[in-house]
Length: 197
Image (cartoon, rainbow, N blue to C red; front, side, top):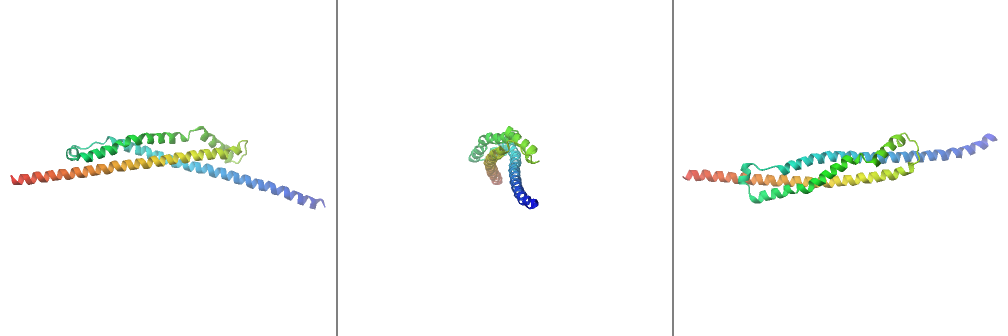
């Protein structure tokens, strides 16, 4: 009789404990997933930072680029003005590039991020409860949003820089093409003039 009395009593006691463990397991998985999303965004930000650093040096060299003597002699003034105008846009974009590179470089070093990394390694990964566990989702969400904003800023600046670089290259090609055509025309004119003399 005692066995049958204990059986129904112990069964309900085990079910809530296992249900609580399931919820806890889901909670750990959600925290891990959110942390991995943040790490994914940070990897993208690092990749973007490297691309921007490369683009920064390309823009600086494009801005400093000068024309050859032949291009200067034969280039149309309108082409030179357009090329210089497109090169001057670099001045407006470079500070944005530098700011993004700076923010992306220091993003991994902010105290909130370091604290979350320590929490993840010490508590979440080994699944050890701690007093501030209920604050972690909010901290992760805040860091996640910060990384999303940084990613969006990087994307915007990158697109702007690509547009400026494309414009510089397009105007330079036009200038060089027109200068080469004018040089050919002048040479042809000199040849025909020389034949008539």
